[in-house]
Length: 157
Ligand SMILES: [Fe+2]
Picture 1 (cartoon, helix red, strand yellow):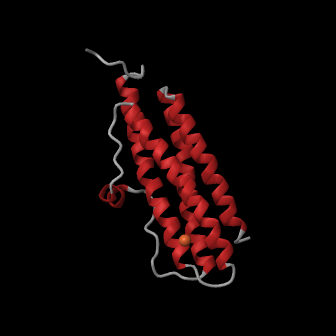
Picture 2: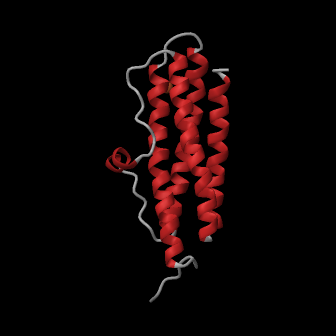
Picture 3: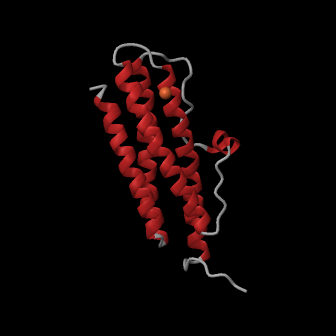
């Protein structure tokens, strides 16, 4: 018996699967980064920034799940292991020797901007591949990333 699957061409599926799996690793890395900052802040504005970061983590985790499950829906294999994140995340490694709140805000802003700009390119690429749903999933993630970057930057300006 042949089970039905999403009517996208195999090459379109594989293009989208590769894009989503790449951003999955970045998104998991970003989720870890947000907690690394949450735990290590020191100085004025501690509580504001500390408390700002937890809802960001929660939101990112939600997007991680939606991205991974779209890969599964496309008959791909979502790969979100720590080994894959360490090997293939495109985000710069988060420094473990910084303490001051502005240093964390700068490090966070750099990484949020990096993934946000990559996701914007991915929206167009998945749309061109014919998967409006993947483009929509990435658009929702892009909105969250841009909002978070605005929150982070607003503390620095
Ligand atoms: Fe906490």
